[in-house]
Length: 77
Image 1: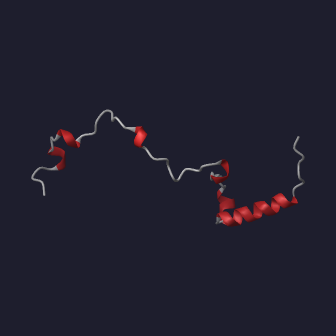
Image 2: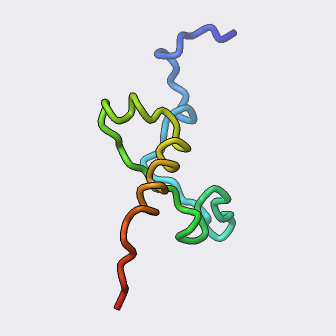
Image 3: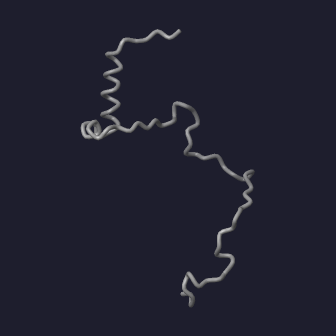
């Protein structure tokens, strides 16, 4: 254990630098980022009363898909 308390430490190596030089050539691609539009997650915030009825993403998706099936299909130009 150290003799000095954390606040009393004067070691210059313990402080954050104002700027860091990073070699981005060695960086790896983020494996968690969506690679295309289909993989991107969409987030919609539900009102409290709606969220009390639909507690899971699956229940929301099921109801919305049923609603989509009842809607008239639009013709795209």
